Length: 153
Image (tube, rainbow, N blue to C red; front, side, top):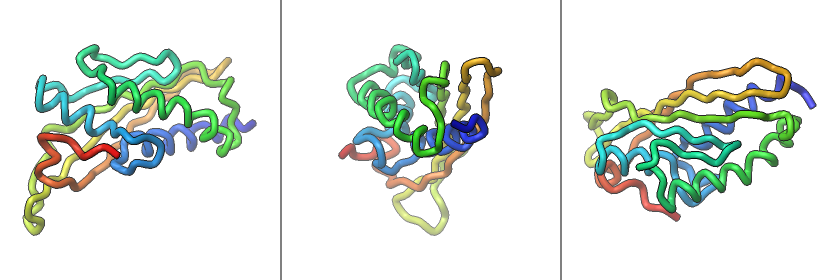
């Protein structure tokens, strides 16, 4: 097992979690954020992959729980693929938010919006200090999805 590989593994895990690709779940983190933005005007959610916690509580529903469980199930395999030992991981939290200041219609693209999803990932390995990093993704989505979310698989 290589400790230095954890940084890359955590980065890739976060990127996959935030992406609008249905790679490891039939649910999307961006849909959790879009739903909260539309219904509650909240745009930040924390996922704790070790303790199976989602906060704020208003973000907990069937879709967000499925998303969390699917990524929890994929995490050990993902770490093995990076030559990392899952049992060394004590903490893994992703705080994600929709950047409300960076939602706009691109000039040359009709019926679309550009959105920015930002995150801060914190992880801790046994006998090591906590590590954290920020990641941001820009996605282009259909205008209808801004209010209703991207259709689930």
